[in-house]
Length: 512
Image (cartoon, rainbow, N blue to C red; front, top):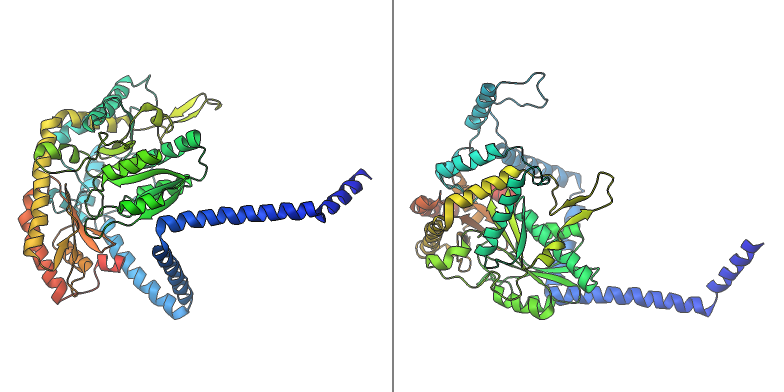
């Protein structure tokens, strides 16, 4: 009886004016929320880019419908299959003497057998030793055979260490703290805070996480957004995808390659937690206007992350080496975090203060296995990488890094200047201040990715980029002696791409 009365009351409520009022309020609230989201998006992206996004989406849907046709699908599958085989052949060691090991052997092999098997794989691979000749863009940051021996010795000494247990490995904890302290001083914030990570991507993701949790705790932001230049590293998009954060991608000036500051200012709203700048960016090696970004960050009380992963031990020494560089480090007001790669497999994320760093940590005090806490995404970490980093910093010293900066940046500036003067079909993107030089085609019959494929045949491993289509080289100590050879090969490659384009190379297949 009571249930029947309740049901009747509920049905009466559904027919009442009060319920109609509630429905209207809910409807208006939902529409208002959607309107505000659309307004923020339009303000950040602009009408024309939003229409471009819609057109791109519509184009993709039409292509997907077309690919449902059996003939079109078969043709695409054949072409993709060819490209896949071509790319895989370059990515995996293969050959008549290479054995695939797909199961653990019944009994263990000897050290001599293991060394011999590695030797076979290296010999059969077309590219495993190419990096030693210097014809490679970045990827390998080789400081010489003596430094390699020092790093390997550090690895061997601490190969089983784990910084998750500092009470067991206090030396590793000491070295980790000192690596962070050295980097903080190098970026002019000795009283700041930071942690080591497994690489630049993790450093960036940790910064995004720290700023997200800081904004939620201090500002009550539950729908966080970040503002990122189109030239910023994809790790910001990756971290935002993991952490459920909306990304506003801001275009860069086509000439200077710096992010559009006015566009960044328009994109900032009540949900913005952080803006991003690069020094230097990966695609073309240029630097954003960090001072202007810092002013915006300070004005709106939001974070500013400066990504220095690619210029980590170059840009701090540019001024001393006699090369011009705009302000970029913690001396710039508004900068709250900087990412800096120290060594392969190791990076440092630095914060202006320890309070902001605290939002990076994960702590679970009630786990049945005991209190669990870790500073970054990883739990257990290889202490050997920290030891190797510490050893490398001690070996190189400031003078060593200063000398590397002089030679590497000197070579990069020579490459940029000679491309401008000697290869009229190409142009250099922006005015790169450090070690990366990107160049694109301004000749209608020269496909820059075709040039990249020709350079690959000549033994060069250059990076392909898009927006605009370009190639770049990240100069290292290995490539410094090869500037003349690079320019001569590049001239020949441009000529071949213009007169005899094949249209079948890896870059053309992948990006075309």
